[in-house]
Image 1 (tube, helix red, strand yellow):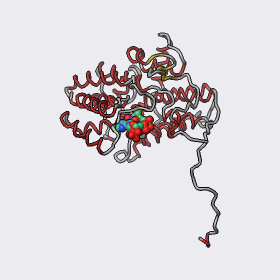
Image 2 (cartoon, helix red, strand yellow):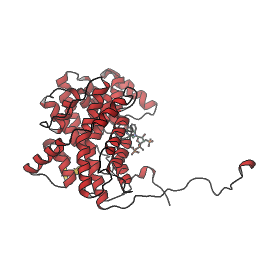
Image 3 (cartoon, protein in one colour):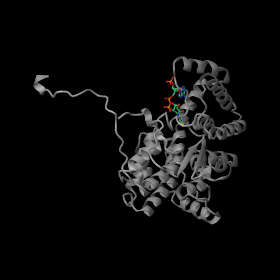
Image 4 (cartoon, protein in one colour):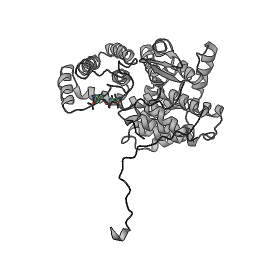
Amino acid sequence: MTSTKGLEGIVATTSSVSSIIDDVLTYQGYDINDLTEHASFEEVVYILWNGKLPNEEELKSFSNELASHAEVPQQVIDQLKSLPLDKVHPMAVLRTAISTLGLFDEDADKMDEQANRTKALKIQAQIPTIVTAFSRIRQGQEPVAPNKELSFAANFLYMLKGELPEDLEVTAFNKALVLHADHELNASTFTARVCVATLSDVYSGMTAAIGALKGPLHGGANEAVMKMLSEIGEVDQVESYIKNAFEKKEKIMGFGHRVYKNGDPRAKFLRDMSKQLTDTTGETKWYDMSIRVEELVTKEKGLLPNVDFYSASVYHSLGIEHDLFTPIFAISRTSGWTAHILEQYANNRLIRPRAEYVGPGKQNYVALEQR
Ligand SMILES: CC(C)(COP(=O)(O)OP(=O)(O)OC[C@H]1O[C@@H](n2cnc3c(N)ncnc32)[C@H](O)[C@@H]1OP(=O)(O)O)[C@@H](O)C(=O)NCCC(=O)NCCS
């Protein structure tokens, strides 16, 4: 029995939710290049859960249904208010809040398909309400109630800032949500599938997935990119910063990928958005620094930017606090996690791999008083 470090190249399941073939990412067969240009996030969630494009009526009714579930139980808000919000990371708060949400859902352990689809819908609808409530509570403000008339993307920005967003902001944020919605068997999705394959409930699968996304090698990379750009500070400092990082053998966050070797197809959209948004805010240095970092890392290491690299300057330009970048990733990826959870339940078998034993050989037990 030999192991493969990090399960690289191991095909662990079949799935029709999304695919990465020849560096092209598709959701249920639909190319993300088309979806990013044309689809709303609500449409993408529908596709991931139903495997087909909605017609106009289906999309309208699905979007209304999603919006109708956006309120969260008051107990969840009360719990947020009781947490040491100035000392903990929002991903830890989110992990706790989603778990709490399950405590107030009477159907949390109901395992028929319809009950599980309803839970997916509720979690997808409520996760932005939780993230924005958290952000406002820690600033001493009351949460803003969801506005059912707004799109998913617009409503998030509205609940976050308490004012209606500009069209360009909504378009950019919608695209970012579409691009992060699903990504085959990434670490957090695999975690969710392993969890629910024991026939544990949807909330447990989601909580496990959020825990996996939190790490800087996965979703936490977008916040780490912004930290790096902030530390660099100015375009003329990029070269010395990156050279120093290379010398210290540090990883440059937002670069490299386990699966894509010729570039992440999502990065170009975020690069374009970063340019457009930083031109609008006038803070072009975030885009300029990012471009320079990309030039150097690609030239020196042959590494290309992944989805997290340009997300950082996009979210920053939308006026979003840096530690909310990864929770935003979670808001979008909830659509993919729940699609995979539903798929796992529909054709389940316990996921239980083996380990290659590398510990000591047979040892003799010695009685405590003789050691
Ligand atoms: C994404 C990532 C975790 C993939 O990991 P992986 O497939 O296990 O690849 P490894 O970490 O084994 O990297 C392979 C080699 O490339 C180097 N490398 C990979 N990503 C790097 C980066 N961002 N900066 C510098 N070097 C990097 C590694 O140091 C390693 O070099 P070595 O063989 O000389 O030791 C990895 O590229 C990474 O840590 N990137 C930064 C974090 C990030 O952006 N995560 C978000 C992913 S969407």
